[in-house]
Image 1 (tube, rainbow, N blue to C red):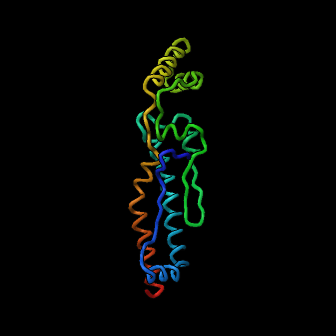
Image 2 (image 1 turned 90 degrees about the vertical axis):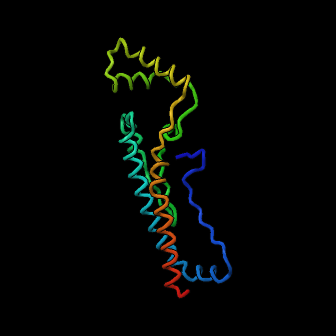
Image 3 (image 1 turned 180 degrees about the vertical axis):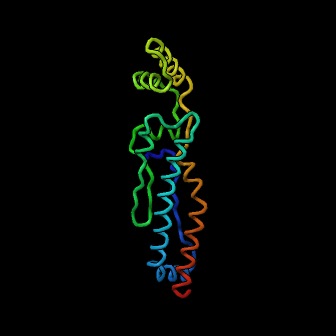
Length: 171
């Protein structure tokens, strides 16, 4: 998912004397495998928690379940990226400024969710568009909240994995 505020990235930088750096180089294979597993598991957990967050939102964060089903996790060597390729996913996460959205999707939503008779559905949809035009939409942080739940534990697990690898490498 596009992340205009740069949240959700963990960067680890090793600062220290030459002995620490040499120990890390010796332990690199062990460390990389352990850290990769921690990050892989964290990505999967964040994905599941984000889906749960969408289901639990008040008002409901899901309508057609398209956003829930679009969430994916992409793993690389020592990274995991949880994202959605839906155009509106960032707007749910971060909210929007006031704007006037197209009425057709809102009209369909009114009919589907509010069970408003056809005669009144257009008026209700116009009222919703007008409200979004004045206030925008609120942020509904399903993904960043999932990340916050996992963040501290993952950092602690990475520290433990690095410490164990260093100890195993002899330093």
